[in-house]
Image (cartoon, rainbow, N blue to C red; front, side, top):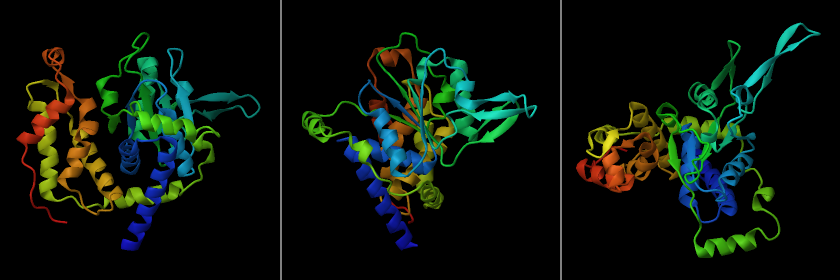
Length: 319
């Protein structure tokens, strides 16, 4: 068993190296994406254009030899443009299902908030149930399936705000941000002879990722750590600056993500630091602050710092 886990860690490090060669200086964000993949979750990236969001998911797909498709969201996009459509075949006198781009391992929904709410809702069934229903017939999605949606936090003209129900189905949200001076300089030379993503070779395959996902589920969680997770989530509902706290689905997502994060670190058990590392990314986008708090400039970071001081950290856990 230890040999198997060590081999998994070696493969994960190879995938991280692949992604790091394409997206320079973003090791923590790469780890978060791998955490979501192993935990079976979906990711929302909120960032300005040109920071490497598309390259990140494309490099991940190539690293595990998975299928990748991209949807450019806009107000004209229809739900059937995502899920697929049944077309009548005159010769055979029957309807034939034409799969949409959602039938893939990695789906990038670029600028998801530019699609109408009806089109956005077409993704809800895929995200939660891992299948789409067309004309009353369910069509399962490939496994693994990861949706990475992006939205621009600056330009809101012609956009549709994601409803809370859809935000709650994203396991985590984070941003890549601008690189620092030295990293951006390294980028100039790294891409002088072509983009590194074109030279990537697969490190493993989707079948091995599915095996890793199964082993992630077996990562041990002590009762004290589980109590810590629940206490943190419940505190988001009681905080004076928070109008809507994190849901029970958020509690489950935080635990699943923590198990995957511990697995990536080479551990078979979750520690409180795993929870604290992931809390803002997993819980933050599910929370709505009071208008007074937003006016006063209260940030999610400051809220979680306050919550961390209020919840007692387990000092002894069973491994």
